[in-house]
Length: 131
Image (cartoon, rainbow, N blue to C red; front, side):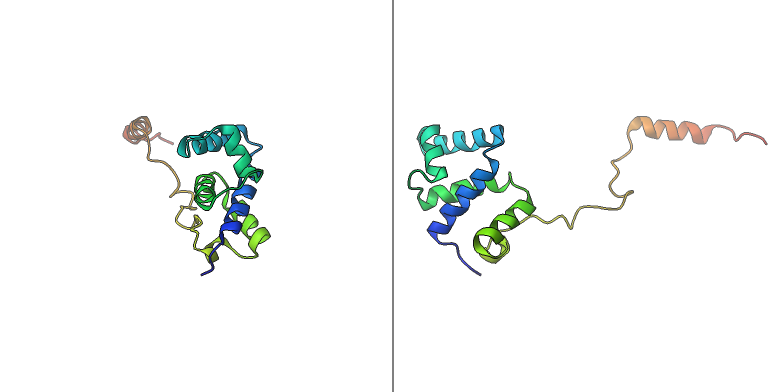
């Protein structure tokens, strides 16, 4: 298993933030959360994450962990291959898989509602039409 250096983590945090920075509510969540967690202002947090000021490893770890759930699996893999030439799993990160989800049409249906059960019961109780 490979390990990311502190500089690589800072680079990854900056790239992940850059990816979500165009989406206002995500950007706001990250900046507000960072400011609350590390007792700083949102403007200072933005400068740290963008690389205008020196971001420390615990800060970059927090940014990566926070943004991890906001980014699609495909984008995570693209970022890792672009920056480090390998998949996130090679560095010990867990990427969600969708193997456990049902793809069978019948298996993915929700449980029938009470109305649907009642309706089915009424149809079964009717006398069959004569031909």
